[in-house]
Image (cartoon, rainbow, N blue to C red; front, side, top):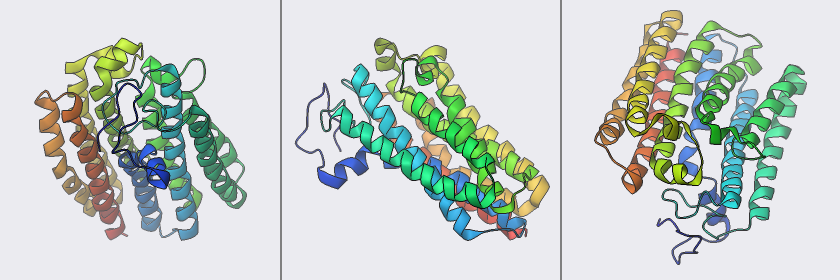
Length: 304
């Protein structure tokens, strides 16, 4: 789908529900699915899985991801950061929806996450209210508010913590009501995969972000270091898989097979691709996330 530029509405832009689905940036949603799949696999390994709680954890994770994406669209569109942007469709910056309507969509997604999280908190414990509130605040403050930390180069920290550690360990916790070591080590790999997705996005947008005064990590450390960081993240994933296997059993090493599809996006990034040429890397990284989630989770379950 062509990306609108300079706020113009393109003839090929979707309409109706399809527009809002595109605006939710579905290619980023693996970042929400992976931690729940891996965290639930740890619960299965411990013979303590509670499927309805796993389903609610998935709903919370997906809703938070969608809400954060809408906030990003709304806030960047309002600031003009998304003008003449390559990549996924921008609702506000592309002139497809008003800032107010996108802000409402973000609020609805946050509400869905809050309601599902509240049910889990009632079932498990009030500490989940605190975790949920912190997650929603972090999702909003990423690009929203007067001093968004995404503009300070801290977006990768948020993604690692909330879509890695919190989501993975939290998924295990709501089912087992324990904090096993395997969930912590697995969460490091999950977080690194989520960060790789953001690094791809920020590397693609780096030149325009720099012009707009959006000091993402890619802007701060530069093009070459961003590409090296992208590759290093997959090394971290491999290490996390090995560390988890040491706790759960050798079958968990199956997660390394899921990293094989990373060869293509790594080659593209190291080959110096920029702008539109990095868009396939975003989709490719998402596929790696899903591949690792499936193989890693399956390996953890096989050693029960």
